[in-house]
Image (cartoon, rainbow, N blue to C red; front, side, top):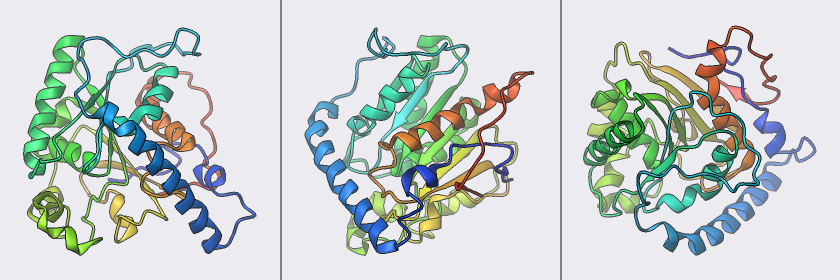
Length: 290
């Protein structure tokens, strides 16, 4: 089942990410490429700091002078990185979420030598059980970038993770498989991300009564998604929302502040809907919602 834009509002990402005057595709592509290069350079500097697993048990808090909103009953957030990456990719997103009321945020590093999405999903499940035990919470929210989103979805759909995961947000995740860079087929986990793989076909199977809410962000300039629409979720049994972002590439999805604002809205949607006198939702503007 798909949720309409009226039911799940988001910030007008298209307007924020691509000014109306820049109508030429070549200009947008040039800007997006320059941004990807800058983000890659910065991430390479931060990469060593994220190689080791973070310490468990102590919630990550923002600086004392940072503005913070009340936490209410917000569940812990688990951040899951993409292929050949680590938790350092979420430095900015983590800070953004913490400043807006998320006081318990954890990242899981899975090994770059991981050869099976299923095994990584089982590891994620054990990690989430540990979080729930330490925090006394029954559920968590997950934000997964690229392959991380696919691992989290497998956990939710195929390993009973919908009991533990309230909301799963994916960023540039090849939900239907991607055909990009055929030369990388030598890696087993890349083969699992191809259209028609056993893992992708498992995710196509019925998922009746799945409790998790899914929100997938996909970009029209994400060159690691082939076809582009593979990063949106299309499954008849899932409560799924797809959000199209314009003007940025794959690496920018977990970094850009406007996307971070959309992620916050996705994570807070259930809480907002539960309030009897919720504030009027922001207009969707030029954001494409499917």
